[in-house]
Length: 448
Image 1 (cartoon, rainbow, N blue to C red):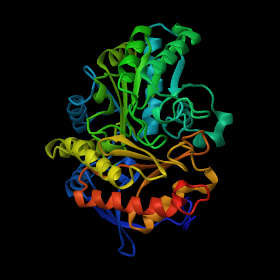
Image 2 (tube, helix red, strand yellow; image 1 turned 90 degrees about the vertical axis):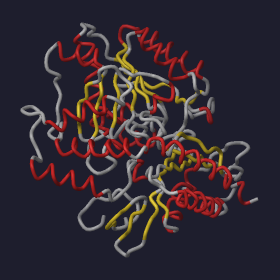
Image 3 (cartoon, one colour; image 1 turned 30 degrees about the vertical axis):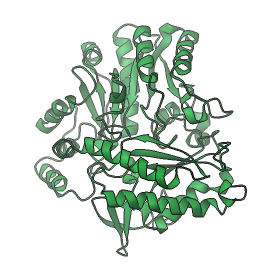
Image 4 (cartoon, rainbow, N blue to C red; image 1 turned 90 degrees about the horizontal axis):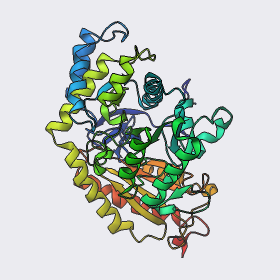
């Protein structure tokens, strides 16, 4: 602990004092290039004065009004404006304070929809191994990230899991992964049939998996096949776009890469680019109308429908649109992958470089040929995070991807305003620290 605050870092955290663009400064004046966008949150960049001004102006006029009594003009305007980008017909949003709350809301909305239709037996929800959907108990139960589930297993178990869409480790023992669209679609079809088709309520998945599998992109036919199965079976398709939304993958939303239109979409992170705790669930018109036609949606949080959050989200949306930052994410993401491929694409400890837009993952391995992971005891990911920070670079990480215990990942998600010189620095610094850390581990191919 530092003072009387529970800290999330294993070691003493830095003290941040200011930020601008893609850089954060600590209390000593040292700059850090934020190649992770925090937790892959910051899209429009740090230190945006216009966002701070909008926030202050709104808080000065009206900071809080409970959603059970009031709506606000700014929230209603935002719902219309973001609706133009949502991959749904006539969407309606339910605003909350972040991704975990949004997932909990989506699950309740799924149940409310089926109850409104008189399908009271639809309660089974499928998600995937290797997924992450949040840290409240319901969202964690839905998640398939085993290291995070392990301490709380006794409280979990209501949701069911299918294989990850993870071609790099498809079929490997313990990876719970398949690699082709046909295999994955067939597994979903069998699971629905085994559960009794009339009992399955929803299938929930990230379009491209975030930190758990470091930007693992599914095979191209996967999402259209899943959408077709869900439609035919009366199962609601829920896209978790908490990390992939708002331009992170080079499209407004991750499912846009495959032309899929989910029944329910979950968003947060990039919606306010880290400036305010905010997220929402978006329901396609027919879903929202069915639920509300049966009476009030029985759900709510103290800080849902935030007026300041809506004002911030609206300004972030304006910046994304007027500065063409979604397109910038696509172009800069290709540039970053090319730089990384040039510097470490053949490195003996780099298994794969993957992702879309400015959501780029690096899978680290003890041996590139066999794909053997480092043992968890080597703490490779932690070593790279520390070495990169020492060099003034912040990266995001994940572990346990290979079998639930072993496996090391680095995820990059810099702000969309990142410069080309900064992209070069990211690739150069990572090349250096990956080589340095890899050489310290017995059995690593990097040791020769």
